[in-house]
Image (cartoon, rainbow, N blue to C red; front, side, top):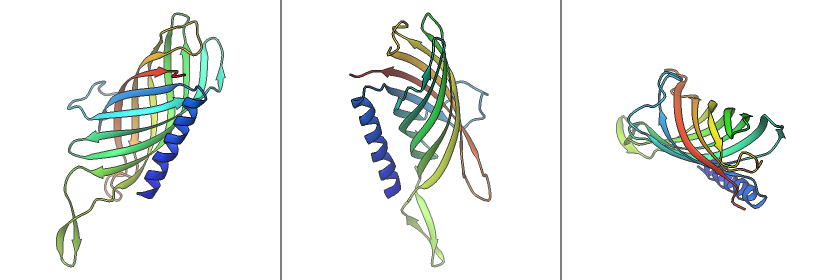
Length: 194
């Protein structure tokens, strides 16, 4: 639990520092699903999530932008888990002159999940209700989508985006199911606060 708190606190500090140094802030809400990637775009029922992060300038020219990004977030899958996560991604955008961006990212993250159901533990020959300490997971991801820059002529333009993120949860259930596939459909906004 202390590692999670340290990771979340450290991420908040990095995001706060990026705001102070005039980096963009990205905010998104999303729908998480345990699904085969690229099978369905929108899955029901809705399992809500929220994510906040920032992007760092690395390489950019008239049509391409290559950038690292970090984010933290929370998701709630009603009958399975709730989770806190931190992601590090490398993004590549293809920019058009009229403001449309074709977006792609590859990333690696850390996810800590907690059961949304009552937990039992077997001790002394009987089952008793136990406290859920959560589970640590790796979450490699691939993301693609579209963005629209509100001021295409400015490099520091706000942007509305829709992203489809496919990611794996590892280890899911060691000795039984090693990987679980997930998808997130993000609707978000990038802006420069200062």
